[in-house]
Length: 262
Image (cartoon, rainbow, N blue to C red):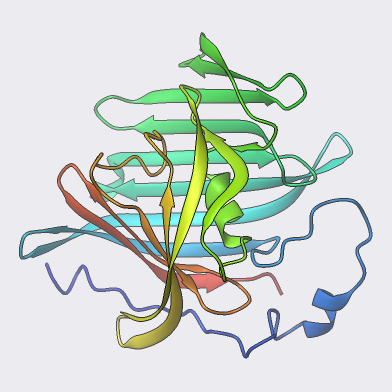
C-alpha cells in the first residue's frame, strides 16, 4: 500500500525569471487585448496529481486529480475556463468541476459540478456580476439565490486567484468566494519558504494557508483542519502539494506531472 501511494513528479522548476523556457520571447510580448494576462498560471496548462489518504500509519492510494486552465472564446468574448476532474476507487467515485471567469479575471460567471458516488448530484451556479447575485440549481431545479461581492470567485477559480497573489506579504485580499449557499471573505496566510520532497525530487516551495470559512465544494474539509498549499517558488507558482484533513484521514495531492502547450 505504501508503494502504491508513492508519487514521483516530473515537474521541473524553471530558472529564475524564465516562465516559458521553450518560448521565452512570447512571455514578453505586448498585451493585444483587455483580457487578463496571468503572471503565474498559463493558457493550456495541465496539472496531474496523485492523491493519497493518510490514516494512522497507513498510506492509502485514493485516486487522481487533474487541473486545467484555458482561455476560451464564448460568443466573441475571451474568458478564462478552469476544470477539475478527479476519480477514486477505480472510477466509482468521480468529481468534475468547471469554472468560467470573466475577461478581466475579477468575477466568476459560471460554476458547475457533477459528483458521482452514493449520493450523486449536479450543481450549477450562475453569477451576475452587475447585480451581485448568484443563482443555484440542484439537479436541474432552482435551489436559491444569494448575494455576492464586487469581486467574487467560485471554489475552483479561487485556487488560481491564490497563485496570482504577491506572496511576499500575508493577509486578506479584496475578493470573496461563493459556493452557492453563502459568500465568504477570502484570506490567505503566507507561512514561508520550505523545501518539500515528492518522490525522490526536492522542490523549493512557498507554503500558504488559505482561510475559506465554511466553504463547500472542491476543498470541503474538516471544520478544525487547515487547508495547506505548497506553491512552487518560481514564476509558475504551480501547486506542488495540497493537504487538508478530511473525515477519514488526511488528504494529500502531490503534483505528478505538469504540462504547458508547445
